[in-house]
Length: 218
Image (cartoon, rainbow, N blue to C red; front, side, top):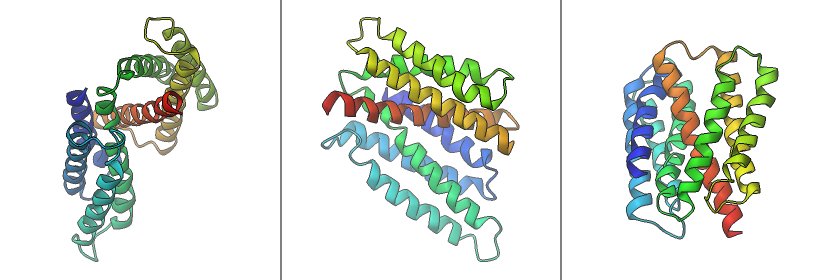
């Protein structure tokens, strides 16, 4: 799962600054890539109390690097505030994506991955329709919730409540980010589609990780 996480994170690192149309995309891409690799390496080779223990530290360094990159552009550069906000958002999303690598280090990782992917697929099918947001905001989570519950019938060792929660989280993320993308009209090309899609997958992995970690060990 570590390799999968890295591929997703690097794809996000390249596409995110272009999705938000940053004035200087390459510095943000480099920062996101470095933070992505550092967070996944920490998960795989420096596990603490939890595999995601070092994520906060990587985010802190990434935020500092984003500020420095925008300051170095000069006082007259345009879009420095927007670059800072979108850069910090990207750092958080990229680092949280290392949850997919963390899933490969625990015994419930396969179940987490399968149920989350099934939920994302169901919600994604709804999101690709031309239905208005007021419908997809409810339909996508409902479909992914049902699919998550059905997936627990497989021999995964997962309770139906856990499947419902993971499916619901995936559906909420897909429907919310779809609505945001349509309202801002930010997705205009293949790069934008990849940026939005990879961001959804990274966030859904993190949401599933923390939700299941809480339910399993609480």
